[in-house]
Length: 379
Length: 79
Image (cartoon, rainbow over all chains, first blue to last red; front, side):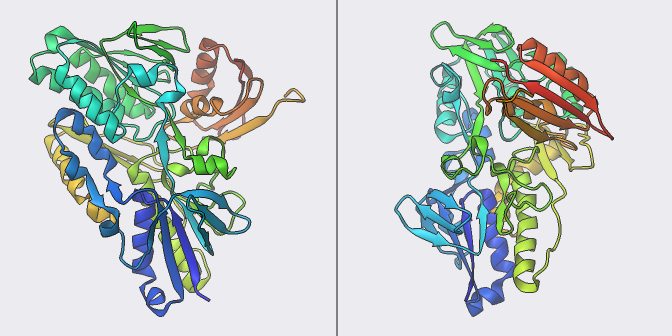
């Protein structure tokens, strides 16, 4: 009987896993001894990091989407029928339409979602760029902005940990280009006692903020937003006034994880080196969905996916493990509209960002195009 | 730990980003008042910045112990 691999989630992580498995198991797929199915929520694949550029008119919406069917290997049947319940004991996933998918190996790649509604007043009073609708509204708000106080507010947990800094630097250059810098003030708030989770990045940010006159407030965890009074208040007792509030909303995992009792907050407890769900031997977890205490980022998903591809392939073909995930994360950091740097680290190597340059910014722009090769498993 | 409270463990050893304090902040959103979180951190800064933040937001420090190469920091959600 064919080994059945089921991938739940059609984002970057799930798609890389599917395409990579097709490459490594092509003979088994041809022989019919392996079957790979994917369950997803939409027929479109979104390049999420591209949303950062949308509010500034530096990316068009059409550039950010491809048909998921074209990104996914043709040998993988794709069901647009989101998972409703995952039963890891009976090894079956039930979808919203009522269809049941049994599996021998399961890959959970359901990802994360923004939850501005978890903070009183945030939905009404804030803008964000972490989803398409939010990025569109922020684009409109920036177009109408004539100067004033901008607060860039960061909440925990959130994915793409460098995006909050990137948006600050890009906002500043956007204001300068519009001639609004003299009439504007940017204040950045962060949940912990420094400007970024990564200490070297935080240390690098301090003089950059000083150079550009960007204000900051650390130990700021949002308690509420008053959309009418245009104020934001922290759990630590501070209140800031704003004319434009740009927030990085808190994230949770997906509802199906909660409904299946697979993890608090929608994050699945996952063994950090094997990427197996804790207590399972045939359930892998990839990308934002894990509860592993590392960055929720596209590169994390990519490197985790590569490990899972190798291990599932090896288990099926040779009945052994191939290798462990070392915690590798790589992030480009846009330091303006024309410069960038990067940072990488793993479980044992601390990060050490280099000086920004225009060339690294160009690499990032190139990657914005190369992403589609990455999702197809070719890069 | 009080008889009725539950304790969740966050193993943030070797976690450079988002780091132990950010993991604690996120974790506190998922537990009930009175329950506890034990954070394991290999970052010596955690022994200072976690108590500092806990004091600011009026949660409760239960204890800090230095183990072999890491710190165990226990916090009780107070509100």
